[in-house]
Length: 176
Image (cartoon, rainbow, N blue to C red; front, top):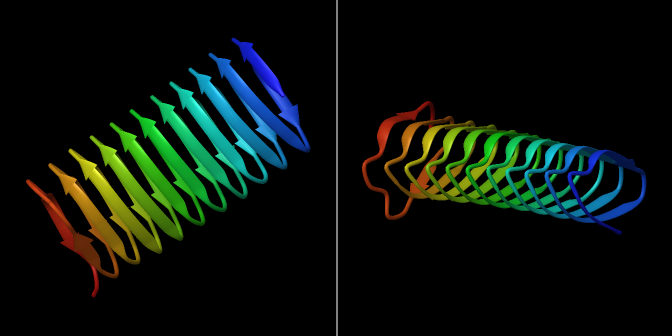
């Protein structure tokens, strides 16, 4: 259990509970509970629960629960639960639950649940549930559920369900 500020280069193989600010380069293989600000470069192999601001470069292989602001470069292979603002560069291969503002560059291959504002560059290959405003550059290959306003550049290959959608631009349906 770690409560620290400006921690860098943290690796562990079992369980980590982290409440810190300006943490960088965190890798783990089992479970991470992370409540921090300005965390960067976090990688994990099993569950990750992250409550942070300005986190960057997060990667995980199993589960990620993220409540953060200004998070960037998040990749995971299994579930991701994200409640954040100004998140950028999120990629994952299984479920993603995202509640964020100003998220950018989000890619997923299975399931995405997104409640965000000003989200940009979101791509997924299976399922996307999006509740956001001012979302941009969202692409997925399977279902998309979108509750947003001012969404731009949304592409998907299966179907889309939109609720309270205003000013949707560049709406592309590849297949139904």
